[in-house]
Length: 188
Figure 1 (spheres, helix red, strand yellow):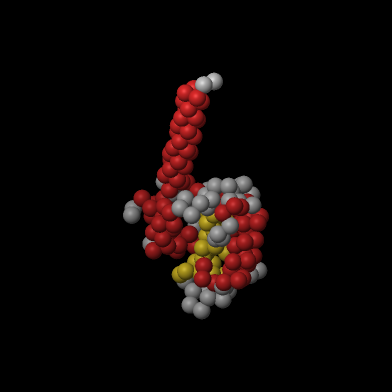
Figure 2: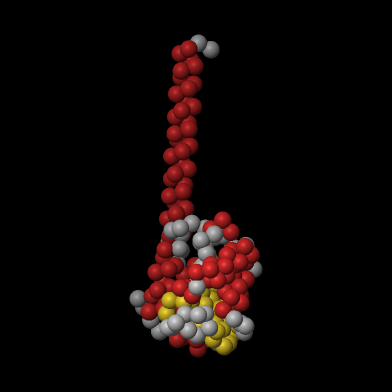
């Protein structure tokens, strides 16, 4: 191979690497768009809802919310443990309104895909929050990237700022909860 051929091959390899990098970036952008388009009803299913769970304390309620997600392969048990550890180390900041908490962790390496669980407690438990205790509704959110749950969080906010939580407290079945959520989000 002469130097001219060698130079052409080097250019071709360089262009191929650039094209491969462009393709990787475009694929990542499409995946990010797909994840951002996921709403609450895309990631919350009857299998991730437990109504009237009997929790002995707040950490056991968090553990149950994680168990619902790990049973579906959405997270590992390590993610559940990290949600409990986060609560135990930082405190009840996850209790963001009267009776409602949102458990989560920053350990994205333990998350396969975005998921949300909902645990309604048969008896409220104390979290240690000075104004919003006791807790009787606990959501857990797991995400594999920092932005893949944006729409989910927005929709959770809409649900909580409406009568959605009260309707969850009265629901008889997980399907009824999902219908309530659909109605709240549709009417917004």
